[in-house]
Amino acid sequence: MSDRIVVDPITRIEGHLRIEAEMDGNKIKSAYSSGTMVRGIEVIMQGRDPRDAWAFAQRICGVCTLVHGLASIRSVENALDYKVPKNADLIRNLMNGAQYIHDHVMHFYHLHALDWVDVVSALSADPKATSELAQSLSNYPKSSPGYFADMKKKLKGFVEAGQLGIFAKAYWGHPAYKLPPEANLMAVSHYLEALSWQRDVARLHTIFGGKNPHPNFVVGGVPCAIDLNSDSAINMKKLSQVQDIIKQMMTFVDQVYVPDTLAIASFYKDWGSRGEGLGNFLTYGDFPSNGMDDPSGFMIPSGAILNRDLSTIHDVDMNAADEIKEYVSHSWYDYEGGKNAGLHPYDGETKLNYTGPKPPYKHLDVDQSYSWLKSPRWKGHAMEVGPLARVLMLYASGHEQTKELVGMTLNKLDVPVEALFSTLGRTAARTLETKIIADAMQGWYNDLITNIKVGDTKTFNEVLWEPSSWPKQAQGVGFMEAPRGGLAHWIVIEDEIIKNYQAVVPSTWNAGPRDDKGQPGAYEAALADNHVLHDPKQPLEVLRTIHSFDPCLACAVHLTDPDGNELIKVKVQ
Ligand code: NFE
Ligand code: MG
Image 1 (tube, rainbow, N blue to C red):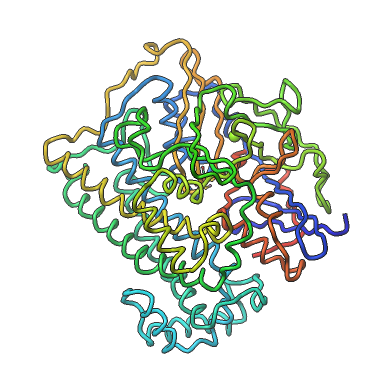
Image 2 (cartoon, protein in one colour):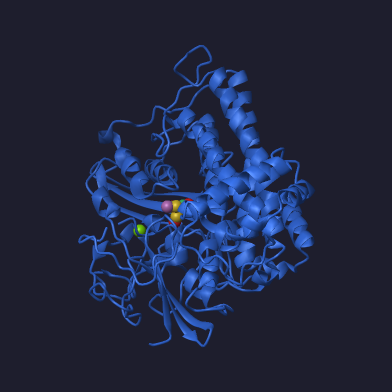
């Protein structure tokens, strides 16, 4: 017991995640991931009108602000067999695409970069040398010596004021930081740059969805009309704003995010051989070109990869009773059928039963229940979801641009293909998929304009809006690829209201605890994969690997500690 370290909370802004790691000297022997916050969205859903579910579901998270709205309306459309017009799918693709670009850039600079970039070291950078470095990597115009001198001054101001403000409470000076001062100054400058960039690009959601965060959705289409002659509808002015935002996104991704990722990664190649863990990857598929019922038209394919075997993509059936199941053997829930039962989400139960230690406590009892997350499994396998799973799926299915980008990255970094299966690979995959999706957004935009030009302005289908016309019983699954991975909501409708509603979200797949068989989840397996800590009192290495998944506990538990207790042992960031 004495050799266990605790990092809590390890998340920078997204809910409460606690990691306990059993040490063998300086090496992590086994790790335990615990969601320490609980809310109750799935319970709140019961008895409501299914057409309203999206507005509640969307409040699961304020980071991936729209994904639960989209998964929710898709679940109702699937249950009631509603088709949506082509323009609605294009607009949904654009909105989800914008969510990816926004979310991934924010994650890289604001939630993950500081695990690799030493802010304090940036103070000793030479602005002229920083400018030369930046210009050798990219054509981004903000790269003059004067620009970096200003950025350095700004940063110095933070430090001289006696507070690092947004950069406080990190392991500055830790020997695992490897970047030279100039690379640190460049990355910190882009951190500040990304803050104002993200404010601009968030506007795409307001154009199509009325507001951000939490834009509006509607079952049967999108809640915006296209009318080039109207001031209040999607008109030429708004469409050209959308085009400007897509260009602004592409520029930042191509000229800042991709080059920064490659430059920073080149100093951390050793992270290409640790932090993989499971080797099993799952995607549901998304970005339809021919409706959600035609998976062959998905830009991101659906499938499962087991044991790193990229030659076989297994089919995934989200309706099959024996494929996706959630377990609670190590979670603070009970099931009617006992602690070791596995339930398909249509039959899912949300019965809270906290049996953990009373706060403040030293350690969780990891032999018993230790998390508010359930453990989802596919055919009994623990699976990783997210950017790495998607890039592998695209790569394995022969997607040309992905093959080129992956080849270019491995080549530039001079690392073997196995380096994909790692902490470094996961972070690089997020950058590459951002580029792929930013480019795809231009295609969806062009298709939307083409449709409008030929007179197709339809964005909503007059579906069977009268609930009395619905079948007495219906069930469906609404799935999508959210920035952190495959997301699905399963809905059971009976007598016009929601009988059961279960969301299985990306961070539940990745951050969930051990299952009935004792198999670890993706975070737990990744930390047990070749992690030697320079100093267990400053577990920077743990942050690197966990943050490479971009954890979001608000999503994963979607349920607050009723007493508001703070469960903190070691506070990082
Ligand atoms: Ni709260 Fe979310 C995403 C979802 S994560 S961020 O992306 O769904 O599990
Ligand atoms: Mg759930």
